[in-house]
Image (cartoon, rainbow, N blue to C red):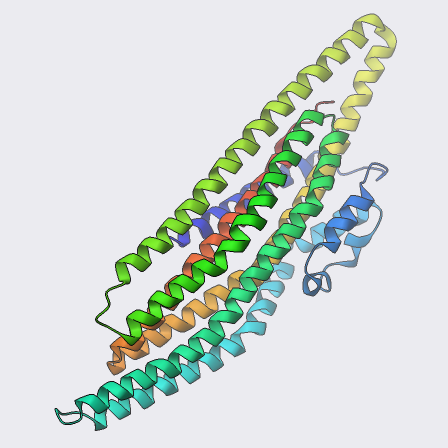
Length: 385
């Protein structure tokens, strides 16, 4: 399935970022916390959804870096992540089970009506029953589908706010390590990403879903219309175009950040070489001091980077659980419709399940870019080192 690749890509990016954070955090675990960007970090926390902020460890809201590191360590525990996943599952499982029960009831009623209207004389009556069942089923699908669309739209809005809050935070973290060019490049890249997310993804996801739903309704209510190929083409091209844009954005962000970091490192080493030759005694002390500051900045980046990656995962988790559960509901409903011989209802629910799979792909593609940008932040070597 095409939607599984973006989901796998997101978790691979997440694993890569977590591994980078672990390596950086293992380098040095003692810091005074004087360099901690308190204001920018608190602005980042305020950009998160309110329902997520309520469950965060209180240490994250401290002004001391060591306390924040303790909160990040608590968030990275398996028990904490599992509890958040179970909480998201519990909040949405009841509604999906209720929807599934209603779907099965409608399908059973439709099958019974068809069974009593078998025969040539009742063929028109059988078609009327099928049409009415499709309309009732469609109303239930639309009401549940609108909730999923609202969830996806809210996630894109949250992702835009998070990106806007990350811009100053990442700029400060790069600047602390002397990576001024990398800070400028990353800010420019994330600004383009935020604009693309707001102006293109946010404004096209609802029309895209509306077109797919319209095609599905027409094909279900009028089986002679063969719109399956056209519907599949629309969905595949939308996700392909989204992947292409995000790939270009990620290539630009990676190239500019890496080249900027190399340029900053070369400039700083030239300054250190000049200081060591012009001021032999003081130059050695300056070099040792810069190495100590570089280790502190690396630990700071690892702490904040790991925190941002985990918070992004926790923000994404409810949306992923919502889409997976709703998709599973439609798939089970389609299987029941197939058992009862309701072919029109089966196609309709299969199309809804497929649409939720493509929505899941769009969500994971957009989130992967932000995770990879945080991985670049963690991986970039401090210029002052």
